Length: 406
Image 1 (cartoon, rainbow, N blue to C red):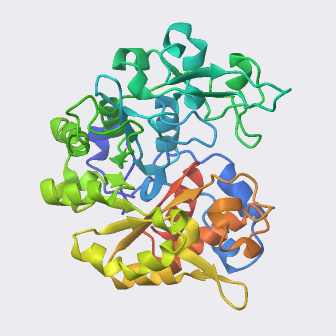
Image 2 (cartoon, one colour):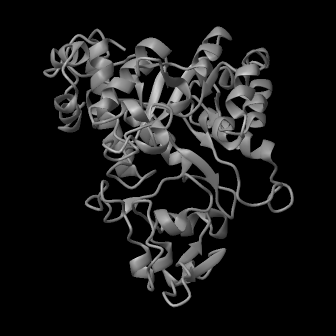
């Protein structure tokens, strides 16, 4: 899938120009894709990618902005989303949860405000947190902690917050110290005060940016039905209703959930949206036999109307006897069942010299340098056949996708 990325001011003019006729001046990749290319081992892939360094580069739906561009920008903020769109992400993600007054907002978790915003630095709001800040105690070994949820505050109160990099220093003895802790490979350079977003605001912004939508309905941290009558079904329906109210066509929306019941609800009650609903498969790491269970159930998912399944990257690849990265049994089973594959999350692991960590766990022995990011991406695209990939820094995927015609 591909379309030309446009800004509203030039939209009318570009509608008269054939897609891909010229480079899109709004797509800016920056240096990272070329750093990774320089770090890539010499060979056919590097030679092919070196032919593309001068572009042209255009927006592509293969490149999905995971919480925006949260490698360096505070996740789920306006600044993060704009950065992702400028890197050519054709689809942007708002993880969706709800406030005390049942308004939908963009947060990765209902209860992450203590690590993703400055709520603890605002005394009146900090006092409303489910678990207020407790400082670390070096003598007893107690770590600093807090838990602040969107359901603790109203929408107006939520909108008063500043987004920050998702981090906490559990050795801190003060709130100020606790709000630090950003990983060394990330940065606080752009985290002065990220603009937090409602779900409805994200719809408006993504449309202005010329991007499609992939909202994820997050599992509530509060008991459902919430406040007596706010059911899981009502929550799932509210998400879809905000796209319908905004006049967004279902073909532009890829609603996601780790809860299969949410996906089945959309298939049954909003079939146009349900046709593109994405089942995020956590069984592969939450259950001891999760991969085997998933493989055995691919046909049943397809029969239930599921068309898209999205496991983490490591699930889709394995190493063959020669140590080469190849499609996994899971990937082959999903394809055989007629399911389209999306995966997550590239550029989330920091430097790869140590094997890549959690997201690379099935291919650790083949991961030596940062350039191996492109090796994995090439296998996922060409051999596994994924339809798109979430990335914390979409420029890398945009570069690869443009070079390979995706």
